[in-house]
Image (cartoon, rainbow, N blue to C red; front, side, top):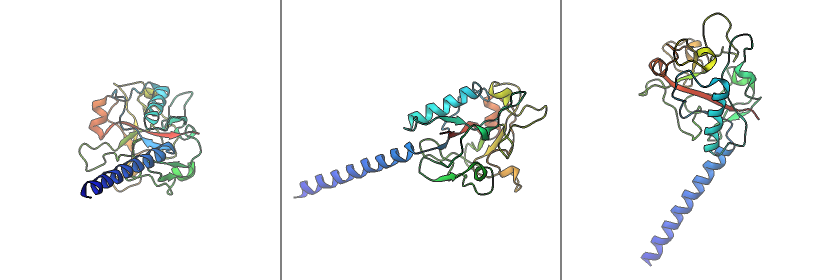
Length: 218
């Protein structure tokens, strides 16, 4: 009798684990937003927009959501500038756990978005280190204004359009909505401050790790 009970309990635990895994996989297949669990490791040199998009697609594929077209939330500057907001579709967007972070572009770039440390998760549903954690990795590369557009002027805000791991700088956002000050820019998810430089060391030193926001554009 005892042996039968043990077998029944083991079977129940196994079924629960399978159900839990299946549930997570189903959520990940409907995922339309995530922060990359890792960057390319080459600072601000992402291989341009194409390289950044490819990273998003690769990670989404590994997480079971590769059927969608994924785009990195990045702007570029110059004569043929690109706005990050124009690359990511119209929403709604939800994380790997099914939590909606924004329903529309206006929501995403306004006060109605639900993007914070608890919801801005990686493609596998993991939280990303924020301010107060060691190491802090809350700087997410965007090169964008608060409205999600390319920034005009002579200063480099995109690490030479995401091809430099040396000179230049990039605008970053804080996924945890935390900063050294209480003002809106310091707490902005997409346009908080410029990085110290474009090398991997500079990005880490500023409070990041070369991570990106990825959105499903379809």
